Image (cartoon, rainbow, N blue to C red; front, top):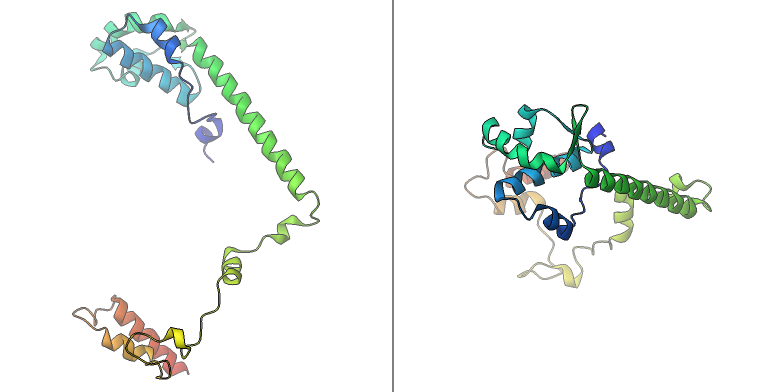
Length: 196
């Protein structure tokens, strides 16, 4: 698992729209866009943003560094900028809660697994493969001569033609292509009849 996925605390980010609108009602569309993209980037990376205009203007999707410098004057007020980083109190608080939620969920899952398998002496040996399980669950195929299994136009007593004959009957314009399904069926049938 990559380091980014290990550090990821939550796919979703809580958004408290009444708080957001209360703090940002004075912003224009470009400022809203820049601010939302910055906090979204902060959330997905799980760490503060670098105080580097060459990075920030791209995160904010500004139309260049000149536009970013105009946006920065307003958007920077929502962050605490120190030690070369842009920090955001609300995002940091929500990240801490997400880490706590993730830890609690992992612990709950661990306890549930322990409780489930506590009575089993060797739980790993009880797991069957998917193919074995599917074979056990599938009903057996009826024999070709059973009354309900004859194809339309043929009585149940009439024997089914060999696979090669059925493949030949299906031949179309591409039947002799080495990759066609009909060609493959015919080759498999021929191989079976030679080995039989």
